[in-house]
Length: 195
Image 1 (cartoon, rainbow, N blue to C red):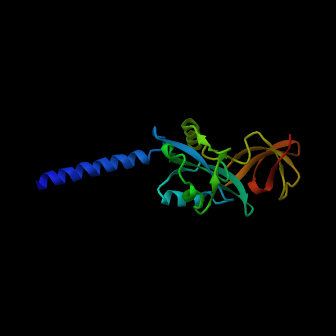
Image 2 (image 1 turned 90 degrees about the vertical axis):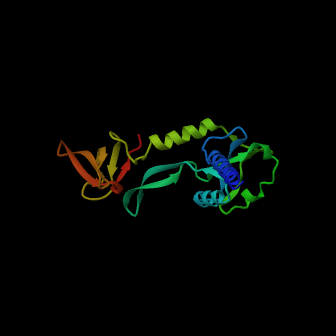
């Protein structure tokens, strides 16, 4: 008898593990769909953490972007869609009370079209995930782009951007005394020239 009870408990725990593995899957199951949450300004991460702590499956796509901060070029991580994140909810409960989601710290509201909550196709989320993994960092300048030096001894010179080194300094090609010269310069000291 004791052996049978332990076998039942093992079966129940393996069923529970299987169910929890299904709920943590990034793909929607037949009874769930992805929806869009509008967050408060600059509170995407706060909303994400608080929704996940309540047991919701969420996804916040992010980009690695090179920005000038404190007069230095550095890579920052920003949301792909500022003020938006995705949440997976049960389709059968479409008429349920969404107050727990709306009252979550960082959340403004669920995105709606009229009275219907906006559903998001799984294929779009797959596309966003692949975008995140295939485009690791978006840089300020592209090789071959025309730039202007805004500081230092070459201020005002126009140049052609070549690359950025490991120290986050840019290699540019500028014409000096009728000769092309390769120069390393602080990336913060460059600006794009409008075409």
